[in-house]
Length: 422
Ligand code: ATP
Ligand code: MG
Image (tube, rainbow, N blue to C red; front, side, top):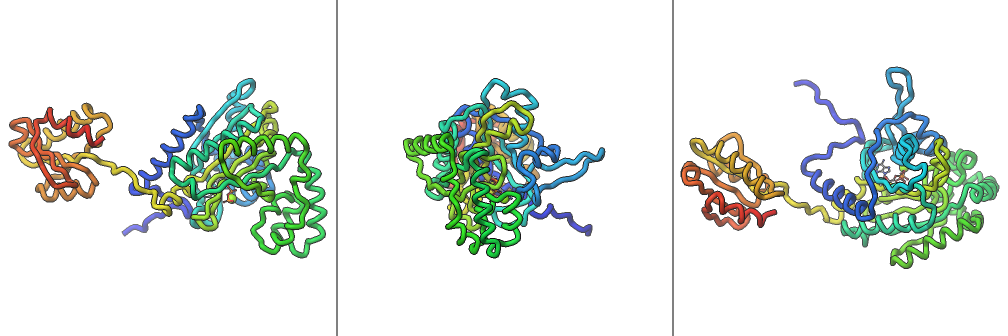
């Protein structure tokens, strides 16, 4: 036998047994974003590499170690998108969507990062992202958080996620904080690991979200970002907190929350769960007022978030909220001369007369017993049985596969019975 080919490590198939749960999640996401009037945007999966190095930042983990970058046939450096914000901003600028107008957008799709695959962390994973352009008040930040809270309620996981919030101020606020932080870190170089030492010069704020417990211990005494926030940043953050309080959304302010990507300013937030172990962040976002201009557009305020769909699917499974509707309602069973064709015709009629009814036809022959087994396996609620007699007098036998009873109906009559299944 020929050697079988495997999928790329960290890139998974979504199998037919798993796709119903994915669809349930995706449908919930779509219904929530549309309840706030947001519009879908679809971007290419591949972009010019420089888009990500400029937007996300050279010194971030994503750009420095996680990108799938390659040269295409004419030597251009391209990258499989590791996140959606950069491409979304590029699309808005290129298509002139945000010159004068505000935009409230969402997207969903695969992202690629070369990371060590483990539970909740993959090389191809899926995000749903939401981005708003042209609005600078804390009201829209609050709306995004309320939107995610609504999704958690819709999915039934609201008791299992908590919100962490912070303000990282403006570029100027951070510049003065950065000086103070670097001075502090320099006094503690002996405790810093190599990663932190490198970040201390390239991206010192990132030292704040180190996972190294020894470094964490000294950070308790580090200068606090909140003390370096200017009046405007402070007022913006207070405004957001007030709106969240009014909406009854609980949060904790985590002063060490800085987020991994360079483009953030002011509001940053994460939704975290304890039910997944180490990969606990299911959604992260914040404001990125400078990014549009940085990528060549007009100065435009912006805010957004992205959530990891694999982690949400894992949560739904872990919390046993993975009960999904079966995929077939009716299984069409036929045996005898001319019944197969009659069965397919009846199935077509039913699909037309009962919108939403899912009818699967049996193919490949076999006796009734074998066909009923298939009907059970397909998860159908009822089987419709057509033998030669039924075809001759335009009737059909409806067998309730759960209760076990069966009854004969005229083919016109059976429609009213099947409506109940939808
Ligand atoms: P983490 O700290 O877990 O690496 P991140 O800060 O790199 O997350 P973001 O860039 O903010 O993640 O992406 C938003 C969300 O996308 C994350 O909160 C997470 O739910 C999901 N996500 C990020 N990377 C992966 C991955 N490799 N596999 C699966 N989901 C991911
Ligand atoms: Mg990461």
